[in-house]
Length: 111
Length: 111
DNA sequence: TCAAGAGTTGAAGATGTTTGCAAGTCATGT
DNA sequence: ACATGACTTGCAAACATCTTCAACTCTTGA
Image 1: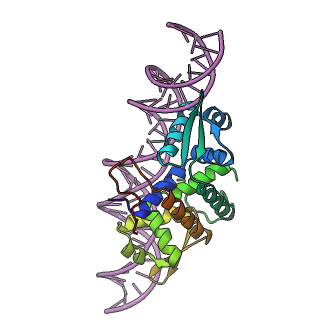
Image 2: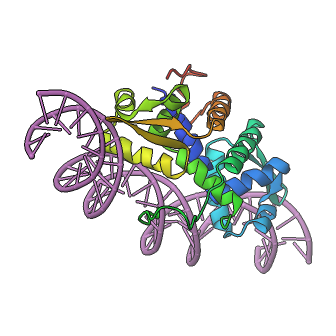
Image 3: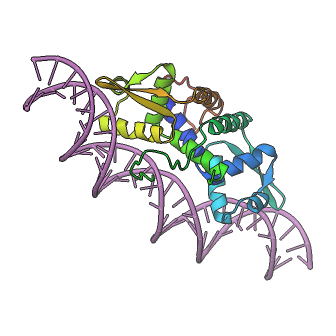
């Protein structure tokens, strides 16, 4: 009764689909961080950060360990780093042209 | 460019975070498809498929062109293929061991 | 011109996700 | 034992996404 592969993939990508979670993963892909260190880099409430860390933990993208008074997080699978790099490449390519004044007058389909 | 990079990344991943969209991208990464061909492969209402295609179009992951009576879609950036492959690798690794202790270990996921 | 097939769009209810507050746990220092 | 700093959790309001229906556009064939 395993989930179809394409659905597992979708879930996986959805997990990456949050600015704070992306930042966390990028910081962690440089080196391990304690929560208060992440907090110093990311503008977010502590409880919110904790929720996002919980999401990443649940999906096994990161692992946490208590070290004395603090909790340190690390990337669980090194491949995640590759994926973030892949994404960077695609984005550089797909450069979101936010606004093109010469573009045809299409209705504003803001998301 | 007005959007922080990590936010653009999050948006990008969120776009991939839907089962139908993943299937569309996988089918398109094999070859171009007309909408009715996609419809034959994916179990989804025509209008829903159209909505998902619109999402992929908006984010420039696919492009559409009318060809007589049908509309054909193709992958916009070839790198998307690489990304899907990266994801496949990670998933094979991270085999989601949700919280089902009775689950079979390392099931083979068909697609 | 009309009918039919192929797609798209708008709208709205159902579903999910995000955020921040209040309250709680844990470990260390006094 | 108590206070404090470092985190986590439960929860509800705010917000976003998904799905479907009905209505609409385009193109081809009769």
